Length: 639
Image (cartoon, rainbow, N blue to C red; front, side):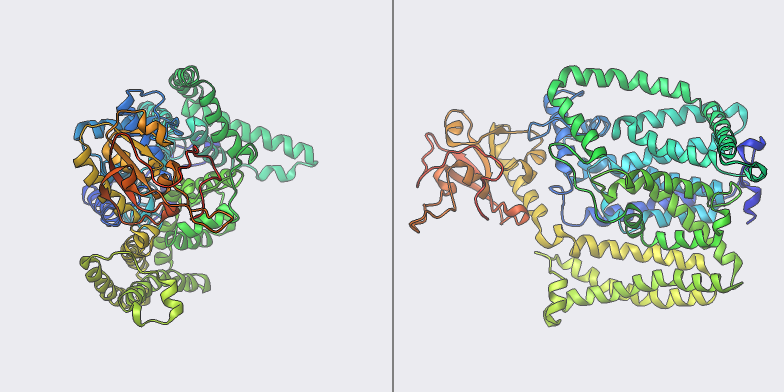
């Protein structure tokens, strides 16, 4: 494919650029992308639940709290705390719960599921516009099957929704700045740009985050390019600097006019400012403390509870969590060559600026999590798809292309090896050496179907390996990359079903089973909760209980039910401490509070112990020596 004919001339040249010619197969390609994304989501949805982990309970609690309280401006979660993210996830999730009446892992995550499907299609269309149909389809496949997607596509947090809006904003900006739409159609792309920017602001970061990510990318992409050559003839550092700044500012002014930046920012302010003011007036000091924590402390790394910075650079996090697509993306960078990295005639110019626009800002902040880098995954997948197509076109022309062929082939070969070796390690776990048994921790419970799937993965790896080698020898690099994407479905299955923490502990499934049984008994009765807010029961019940910190509060309330755990019993009077004389104080038993109707298996996470649904008796009788000390950090006893 002739890539030069597709790209836009530099902004300063006034060129209009032209896109790839229309191609057939769009509907079939979109269906294929949706099926691959759905396959990843289905694999994770069938895995053990992880609702209690990854800060999901804060977001789910805000969604449930929106319905329970009717406060759509400042919802509170089950801990009674203000929601830490903007309202859009709750505004999408709450109507879903209201319409279905179902409170389970899928409905909690449905906003993320929808965002994943839409984002996959957007990656395809963007790649199709830049590089052609085949590359667009490959880019979407690579994006959907990076190993981090096994977590992010089915997680009740705001990251995937934000990534979708950033991707949509970049798609619209591309039609205004680089692959320009006809003049009579640019208005709709301007509208799309700022609507998606506003929605992104309402998802996460309140406009600060997506303005930095999208704005930084576009600022870099419009600033660099041809036109700096005459500066070599200018003598003097200050003259060169002055002329460079004037050239860059002139390009930025043109980009500002093309995107209607002033009007767009005014629209964002008109939507966001009233919401901010309302939250400030309603939330008061509590809201101000929330802003202090989420903005000031994350930016500066200082404050009362400063976030911890990752010891791993953001760039390395990006490469690792984007495997195997990052292998192909790095190959694309090498194929393009340093001289073309920041040339607007280069096919990797825009996605490279996009990656830098995401990785660099997060390299400067504190408390980096790999999830934050998700908005840049699409750009790397697009680069990787072009790299695969370009390497296949060039063939064994030189040492670089021959070396990259081996590097690209290593991706599916390594995946095939994992699909064969890891299941064998689990299937014959008892017969493995001790160091292997220690590394491969067996899940708490493995359904029979999972054992059959592990056996099937061994066969899939055995087929994948020779296919990858054969495709590589025939220089069919696109098939090599597709085999890597297909193989990653098996890797994601292994990670989520047998390797992950939720699979090993089974805690999420224990919480779900307990909640289902409790819901049938409690019905619409009131209930109290003691140290069980983080055990996910309340969100599955679809409403919050009354907080109880000591026995007196339970005796003083006409509440028939109590949900607690072994750690909660410590708060209600039990202790594991031994006095100096060596006499152990008698432990409180759940039956001391009432009749235990439901008891869970032990919860391993944070050593919560067992969960209990207790039908309270009046008055509550407590054996042993009660310790009616309200909860305070550091006074939890030893576990």
